[in-house]
Image 1 (tube, rainbow, N blue to C red):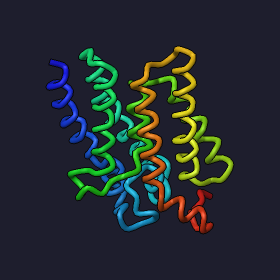
Image 2 (tube, rainbow, N blue to C red; image 1 turned 135 degrees about the horizontal axis):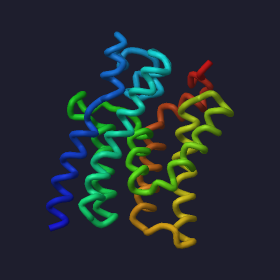
Image 3 (tube, rainbow, N blue to C red; image 1 turned 120 degrees about the horizontal axis):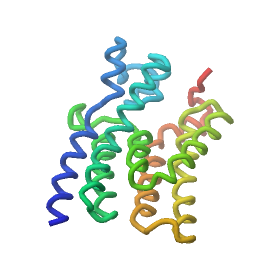
Image 4 (spheres, rainbow, N blue to C red; image 1 turned 60 degrees about the vertical axis):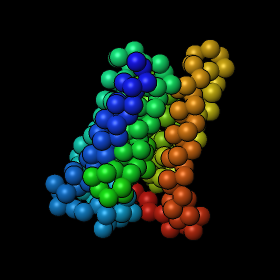
Length: 199
């Protein structure tokens, strides 16, 4: 019975993940994120164009839509591998939202929401890595790329010392690589020296 429940939850997670909180918050501020800044549907672009309060609301929504379906899956006693798949479905909804013509964000906050449930130890590590990368450069994408690189390595170390099972670690690697791939345009701008900094 686990697999049918997991499939149903994955559909639910995808639909929840598809709710474009950042886009909706920005529209409440009178801004269309698709037409300003990096045009990314994410909290960092909300921050640049609507301010910190709007960004905080957008971030909370994106975290919640990753955490809620994952929490439901975990509370039903599904195996970690299936819980991770439910979380991955929420991320897929954020990246390719059905409610926004499949044009979404870059999975950082929603992935963090999944980790809050699936592997909470990695959340402060990811936050610290993001903060260090951002503080050193004042570039949000650098913080995200540093976090996406550090978390899988930290998760692997945790598994090697007996603090984690394989499924959450595999999730960290897949999610981390996805975040890096979704930042390929940012990486190109970083190499060209044109990625915007927060002032």
